[in-house]
Image (cartoon, rainbow, N blue to C red; front, top):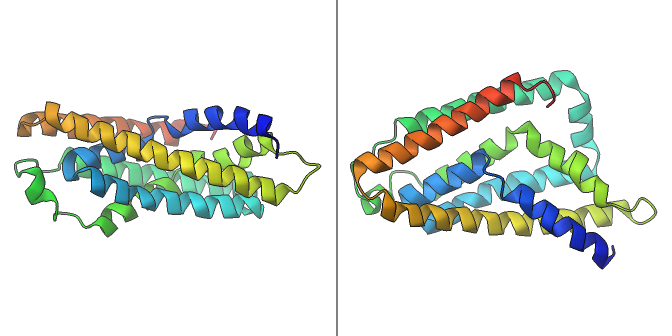
Amino acid sequence: MSFMILALFIPACFALNMVPGPNNLLCMSNAQRYGFTHAIGAGAGRIMAFVIMIVLAATGLAALLYASKTLFLVVKIIGALYLFWIAYQLYNAKVEQSVASKEGKKSLYQLARQEFLLAAGNPKAILIFTAFLPQFIDASQAVNYQFFILGAVFLCLECLAVAIYAGFGVYLRHWFSQPAMRSLFNRGCAVVIGAMGVGLLVDRKS
């Protein structure tokens, strides 16, 4: 794989990593509610989901899923329902307690599982690995090797995006120190995530 291909891939990929999608918004909310460390640890859940997607895409199974309208519709509906559930939880999250006292409200495993399910249930994520990555692959060379190289770069950039959104969430904590403001922030994120769920259901292109 040439340096020129990577030079083109990295900025284009990072733009996708930084899109304020449901996982990034959840990461920002987790950082604001539970702290930077918990948000970073929870991000491992989405990374695991993307690792699975990369392997599936490399073996052609993800393309098969995307080609099957029925299977893809099932994934889309499940993903949308989970977005609604996350939105409901955020909207009704209690904020009276201090951040320190809320640390134990949800375990790191629970937060990571939440990130994993949110990423795994988003069919648009599959398109990254079945439509976006192949554009940077030279068919005359070892395809699987190139795919896993690009996948590894994607995962590294995704980790950076997690850190950036978590840092931004911690920064926002200082601006939303009052319970009423924290509640407003959580509900704002909930509305956006819920709207993404609606968009996922009505989008006929996905």
